[in-house]
Image 1: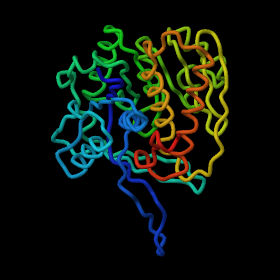
Image 2 (image 1 turned 90 degrees about the vertical axis):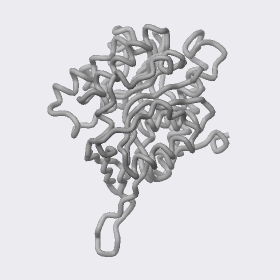
Image 3 (image 1 turned 120 degrees about the vertical axis):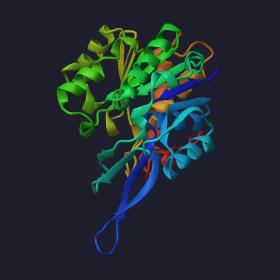
Image 4 (image 1 turned 30 degrees about the vertical axis):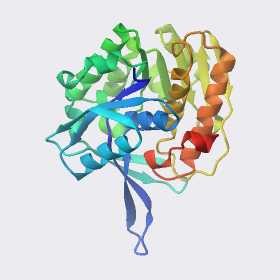
Length: 310
């Protein structure tokens, strides 16, 4: 049995690393894509993970497959299509904050027929994000995968990572980002996404509204303030870890991959018998992992190993 299967986009993050003497931005072709990031983050921390998605028949696609394999992620569900591998151009402010522009390609083309249902239902966790809900066959494939996993008793994890440039309107984004909520057991949001999904930016009220929809564990990342949780009617805030920020890209994925890696390592089912004290210890670990990623450049290349955190 695989601990965590992630479905969605794997892509090239063309990430700004500086400027040359003539003032021209310098870009590094980093591997990325939120669900792939989560799979790698969890694998580096000891979980067995798999990734399901689609790349192009090109050099970038070959590179991404190799990166996942090198990080011990099962790529038997990674398909190859005729469209080129998807690109995300990531530029940074002097404070390390990100700005995204996408050149969509193969990731949109994953179809329900290309999914291995046995792989999905034999996992402890199925994780997905909202980028694959933006359109194309991948939207249907992602929702189909989540529905099949839910029916099989697999824990369904969701990160509604909002990327404005990928949606025709805010209203369309809200509609589709809310669509999978009835299937979700665990949700991770940033403070930026609270109002979008719930209509309020107050973590207490937002998490209560999500819990009313049947979501068991609500996690909200609050940057350097730490992480907020709602679990079994209890809420709490676990402080963040001070760090010198180089690049925030991949920090939220590292956080979630860290949480999932600890949940699947429990003797029981991932959420069965989980106490608030145990959850807070998991979140302290995840905050530390995310702070390491923030201190380095890139997404996947910046993620820590278990040895580094120990």
